[in-house]
Amino acid sequence: MHINSFPSFVRHIVLASITLFCASAIAAPVLQEHSIKIDGKQRRYYHLSDTAATTSGHPVLLVSGSGCDDFAIRLPMFFERYPGAVNVYYLEKPGVAKNADGSKCSAEFQAADQLDKRLSDHLKFLALQPELQKMPARSIAVLGFSEGGAVAPYIARDSHKIGWLATAGSGGLPQSEEFLIFADRGVEPYAKPFSRDYFLHIYADIKKDGKSLKKEFFGHPYAYWSGHLFNDPLSVYANLGIPMVAAMGEKDESVPIESGRALRDYFLKYPEKDFQFVEFPGASHGLKTAERNGAQEFVARLAGWFKGDKKAFELK
Image (tube, rainbow, N blue to C red):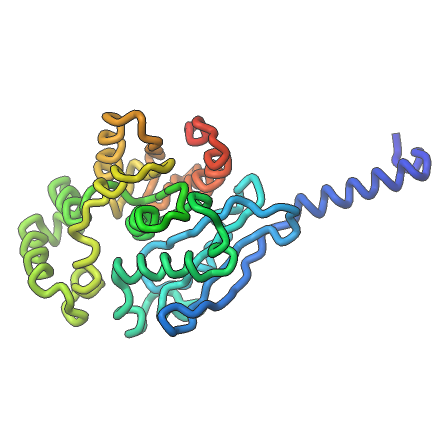
């Protein structure tokens, strides 16, 4: 039946419904830039949200990986398959220029690029950003990608506002051990041109000169590595009493899958803990394969997990 054959009032209702459906179908989250003062300095932050939504989505604090590229450019892509209202906050690192490709980092970035600084910045952001400031205890999720996944458990540990912890591309072993695993497995460049002995020598030097911004290792100053290499993430996870999920690609080229499996194996001994490990078969550090965008899939499944779906991360 053609729509013009409907009575006039019915036709108007149908057309209005079609218009509303189409508008909803093509509506996309909007990324808005804001500024906030932290430690006396203006900082950029971003809010990705469905501005037309009648209710706000579950609040997520996103922590990006390493480097000085402008992550905000890529942020919306991760939530393209998110099945609900998006409500994501992202604090940019100090000294990162807009549209920066990460090829050359500023002196300001290098001086601030330390785990303790990233942790304190995010804790202050949670306390100062107007909407997050109003959030009650255990109402915000923290989502960390790669290096951000190493920072996120500490944010969950130190902020009472965090009620969910999700990480992708990070595990439970100290980073110093992860490099040795790659070296022992014969993975380049960890085994060639580098070696286990080389790493042990560098580790000793970093412990002696851990504040140096001039000495470098793998593209970062010693001051960066002294805050990351020797931490024990598993001990932080173990003491959290909130829902946790960690995702890794089986063929992760930056963090050995053994590190994620260490988390899995630890929590198998403590089934009372609300922890899940999601291993994407054949996937890379970014959870990708030629056929699958695991990062988008993982982020999309968070929506059900926030609502208590215990099977939200069952891979098909």
